[in-house]
Image (tube, rainbow, N blue to C red; front, side):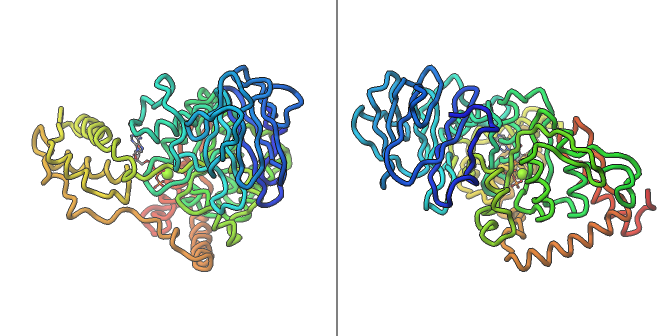
Amino acid sequence: MAHDPRDIKTEADASPGALRIVAFWEGGFGTFTLPASGKVTIGRLPECEIRIDHPSVSRKHAELLIGPPLSLVDLGSFNGTRIGGERVTPNEPTPIPPRTVVEIGSTFLVVEGGSERSGPADLASRPTLPPSPSREGDPELVVTDERMKQLHRLLRTVAQGTISVVLLGETGVGKEVIARAIHRYSPRASRPFVSINCAAIPEALLESELFGHERGAFTGAVKDKVGLLESAAGGTLLLDEVGEMPLPAQAKLLRAIETREIVRVGGVKPRPVDVRFVSATNRDLEALVEARSFRRDLYFRLNGISVTVPPLRERAGELEGMARRFVAEFGRTLGRGEVTLSAAALATLRKQSWPGNVRELRNVIERAVLLSDGAEIRPEHLSLGRRPPPRRRRRSMRSPRSRRSWRRRRRTRGRRCRRTCGPSSASASSTRSSSARAIRRGRRRSSGSRGER
Ligand SMILES: Nc1ncnc2c1ncn2[C@@H]1O[C@H](COP(=O)(O)OP(=O)(O)OP(=O)(O)O)[C@@H](O)[C@H]1O
Ligand SMILES: [Mg+2]
């Protein structure tokens, strides 16, 4: 299988509905589009259709029988094969359930595509990888739930290559912190991690933010500006709320990914781009593709692999660890010293469904630390009965039509903002786009609170 991402086939190359195999191993990955029927061999030998040149893989390791159902026969391999964490019996066909991880030696294979509408592998929705204590978890995050450990273990492997990752999941589940973790796990960790919130930036500014601009490109472009794609050189770019990206910017981004070059707004000189893309959204990206508000070709480029981060209510085992970490953190930062969480308060937290997920839990704990007068948080400090409804992504519920009208309003706001504040700047070391802040500043200015810059 190919190691160099330039040789990687993507789903865009395959016929619609075709199955493809995505394989990850330490230091590499590759994809293979399966034929409609027949057999495909997996192994280290050059004559294998799916060749994985990794020492844990036998010369002729296994055979895929393209069904239905899709099944695998382990050909008596040295290190064995696991499907969904279960070791398969050699020389017997074993069906591969949809979206299940297959382990060939110490490499991971994921079957994507096919007729299932859910498409790409949804690695968190099926706990499939066996525990491996040495490589799980993340010291910067609370990761104690078995599914989350599996997810991080897989992401550590995925992070070694440059395959693009889409992070799906409800609001507040931790998509951004996981994007940062992918960056930390990757060989790009010493290079910048740059994030752009596609929903917070008016259309008129988004292209300039992503690709930069040349002096004089538009009114207010008083000097050259480096875009985020250039700022993230050698590192990782998080396209947060990617489903909100306007179509013109999508077209330009697709071009940049395909040519590995960008041209700044108002410029002519192509500049090389070397970033790993991680995209995050709490929207159904495939539905946006169907509604034609997200380009299918870009979707395939960004969606090398998709991972769904489970909601907090499905990670009950993590609640206590998170609550205690937040109590300690806010005790410290709010100057309350060593605050503890009473057993009754913990029991109350456990009864909640947490529609706002980890962010909501964090907010509740912050309030509780403030309300607690001393060393212990008790149930009455949690103010769960009176808490405001979780932050909702109103746009998530919008129809494509109402989204269009929202975009029109956003464009108008953008024009207004550009007149007052101009495109914002972002330094190469920034980890968060300054645009949202600039826009808010711009709005305040345009409402007359301060003069123009
Ligand atoms: N595993 C974790 N351990 C500790 N803190 C976490 C963890 N996951 C999330 N958080 C915290 O929860 C908050 C929300 O996380 P994050 O911003 O990554 O969520 P999100 O999925 O990107 O949300 P949204 O869809 O609303 O943008 C952050 O303050 C983050 O630090
Ligand atoms: Mg986020």
